[in-house]
Amino acid sequence: MSSPSDFTLLQNSLNGFSDWCSSNGLTLCTSKCCVMSFCRSAGVIHHNYSLGSVVLSRVSAIVDLGVRLDSSLSFCVQIDEVVARANSTLGLIARLAPEVRDPRCLMALYRCWVRPILEYAAVVWTPAGVTAWGRLEGVQRRFTRLAVRRLLGYNASPRPPYESRCQLLGLSTLQSRHRNAQAMFIAQLLLHHTDAPDLLSLIPLYVPSHSLRERPPLLLPTRRTRLTQNDPLIRAMSAFNGLSHLFDYHVSIPSFRLRLITQPV
Image (cartoon, rainbow, N blue to C red):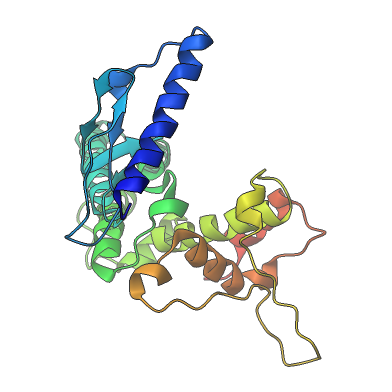
């Protein structure tokens, strides 16, 4: 949105949408509608929009299908919420721990209640920074300390490092699971298990003009800024390139998932 004509075009589209709904007997819930500008510039131009006779409120963050979007698409709000919810749920499990005698039961509680919070829609919001990853991984670190104490005894000392605790409990790090989810997303697009032709058209296959040394299957587009390099689709393609040796067009999605899970760390 850079000029008044852009505002007019969007408002005209909203008017047409509202009129179409009215003519077809559909009622819009305007209380669930709002305006949000996605921009990293401080000089963004705001304009008031209306839907029917209701002027829409303006927000700086919103939840869409369980993912919290902020105006700069940094996903900081999403990560804050995920870490808070996961820690809260893990706290409940920790309070139940004295009543749970079998460590496998603790594992089941973690996998069922906590880890899905840390992984839901992760292909979209997977963090790029070390600090954010440390916060996410810290939730699982906390759980592994609890589970290993129960497995080895409360007086077990010294405590194994995080990676060893994960191996002992049969867990993968969250970062590796997020990377696998990104690779799975690209594989599902390539094998048409996910019906998203617009996204599929954005995946550039590397087709060399002559025989060269081995190259990754996807040609990653060049981006000038760190922000654009963190585009979720580009990061998913990068993860797929790193795991492409496990992929084959003749292999089913379940088989590819099994290869990801069983690959050496």
